[in-house]
Length: 423
Length: 137
Image 1 (cartoon, helix red, strand yellow):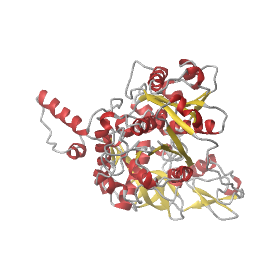
Image 2: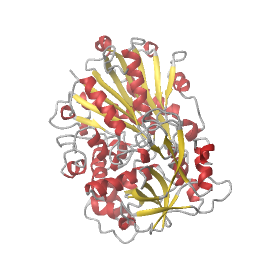
Image 3: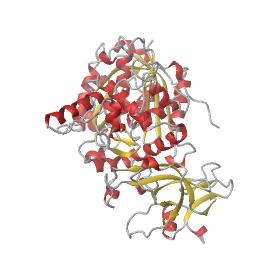
Image 4: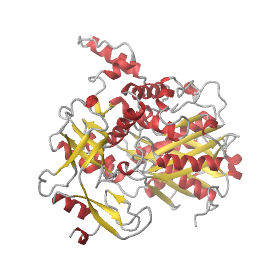
């Protein structure tokens, strides 16, 4: 009795996008970051907006409960930007909370219920020590059958990496290359937590050693630095420190409106023409350990809705919570065949000046990964790139008319994919 | 005997305490589930039975963890004493997560996917949550 769905009830346009700086901010709470992101977004609405025109707000947030001891944060976010008594909804899907909040906002506008909606995400993670952040993130896995034996989040992705290496012959260096690429992009992003390349970090360490009169490390290439277990210790083999996204505070906001209102707000609106969402079993219950089926399902739905193919997509922001995750994503989205993602990265195809730029923002790896905000933060990058407003990190030589975001919750229990078009 | 226990996670861990690794099986389509599912997610039948697994399998994926959660740190594991966890594919078909012993966790690059392992039933400390342990042989 399944009926074919797959079309939005009406068109949805993105007319504003902004984010707070991502990083570690001991003196700020979730609401401060949220106000910073909202204010940044308001400035991007070409023809201006009034807060009172926003009819509903969706807030992606994984676990302010455990990170800050604060539950029920949607009305607080609404209150701090002046939206009370408008409906305020929190959306939780682990690290895909932001992407799913966007999808709920898209559905709300497409349904005709609202014309003007705020889609947002926020997370304040740095209040806790690392092992309790690890515990909190592990609560997004299956606590009865995964976390109990000691599997952590880096550990689950590391297990995927072990299977990927075994099946396709990839090496730890192939994962390191993803980090090198994303840090190069992050170095050009003033909002990134790591606004520096691996080479910058490496040179700073060499300089520090010289100043302190310590033995100067013998690193020539970025890969030398990343292979050094002192500089780049193992977190969960084969994932090392620089394979893992950081612990981050941050927030991001998007303004969505019904298509027929887009020109009232923006001289260069971006249209959301595809939206997909899938779920999956716990990792151990899957047939395949080297692919995330929820991503394949979400991508298929989004591509079909948009009427485009993977090869049509010009740039993508994908969920690189760990370097292995970007490789798997690039295959699940159909950009490369299974087992070919690492070769494409090796050849520079996914670099900013490559044929298929991935994570020009620096990705979660360098930009930072405030889990509930990441899915919205990805769209902020797409907004800048599609409007040719990304400054130093603008993709060279491309008129970007089709772009994609891919946001994963946990090891793929949730995946949300969106496709964007500039006419 | 085993048919008397409800198909749920509590029963699964009770069986584990009795040194039995138990899966659930759909009586209608014979699909096998580990962790035990109470409803068949293939044919949606709800008549399930317990089946004992032999506990032999192969490492399908693994990792050596240097930065653990608080519960494992409390066991004494850390960067200098990392631990091995993996996903084991049992000979009967299902895959399941567990702690892996009998392999040197300090040399992860030498560990191979496909390494044969067998379930172990260490004495559990009372009040501690159980988990599966496999040993390489």
